Length: 428
Ligand code: NOJ
Ligand code: NOJ
Figure 1: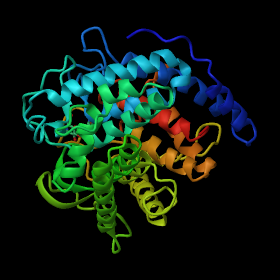
Figure 2 (figure 1 turned 60 degrees about the horizontal axis):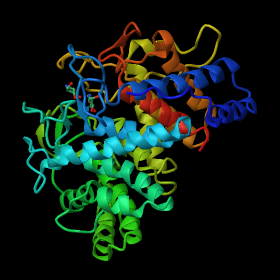
Figure 3 (figure 1 turned 45 degrees about the horizontal axis):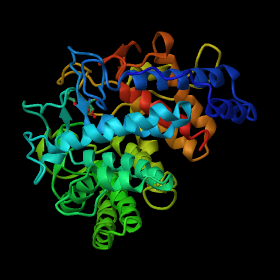
Figure 4 (figure 1 turned 30 degrees about the horizontal axis):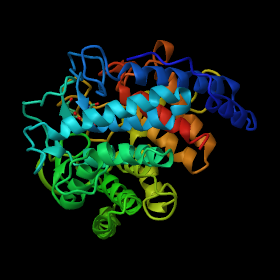
């Protein structure tokens, strides 16, 4: 990947300014600025590596134990979302990167794979080799959050292009009204609109069924898709996406479990692992953040989402011994390190072991509280993430639940992307 010009953008300055008006430790304030800059660099390092196709995104440079050297649709979309959101760091590079990603994504869509092909279920394929080849081994497939997340990055990009006089490029490459779809966004929206009811594997690639995370990202994609279709004069699609969006939204209600007092991750399990009895999962918070509703049900201000966040914090506080340490040496409060879900048995290399806290899960709770304006609470989670980060702010996938050292795939791109997403809450 081409190197970007050093990040000195207004974003960092705005952050410093904002924080200096609060009583926060300047130490953490500085670290957040530095870490933001590093995360932008590392996200770019993960994109279009020399031996990968243009627009591909490695989930991690780790090629064995575990091998994460693949383009996962979900990780890539969440990464590109940050590239685009932080484009001020290097506008030209961000623009080129999004175009590369859009082209590579269309290639993915057109590549026959074990989920199917582009005329049926192929868009649900969760990952590809970095050169774009299909991954022809057994896996938890399909994963139907992928097309929704991809559309959620590419629509704002396309909107920007439209606003800058690039309509013909958009119609040619990103969204054309023709059916069968022959452009990347249109194909994803059609897939989501027609297949959101299908059971699929969850974002953790383990359970087949109906998932809150998948549904809420599908809802948001269809809602945004409705507006986008309207802009493109695609009236039939506008109406159809709107109808489906309402139905998906309604189906989200079913995930509330009154007895448990939180939203559960999965309903109607049809396959995959069966031991996630609590249903408690950071996937709920991630879904709320990635869908980004500003208010009301399924937003960060939904009291039921808050109940879910509190249940997660309590559970992980007790579960991981690393969380017994509740203050830093200088006396600042450390919130607990957060995992995916309490029954997790994946230690970063293999399943059937002890699960651990994850950086991206800990960042999710920080972002959740920051978006609610509960800054001190957010700070305690950020401090937790900082405490377990390696030299130069390196972040793998996991944090050992007993000794606090990093575990699992090194330099997980999603760890960095999730930190950038969190930092955006500080200067919207
Ligand atoms: C099992 C993990 O639990 C799952 O989340 C992961 O995607 C796969 N192994 C592949 O690493
Ligand atoms: C395992 C995670 O469970 C999954 O969500 C992710 O896509 C892959 N690792 C790659 O990071």
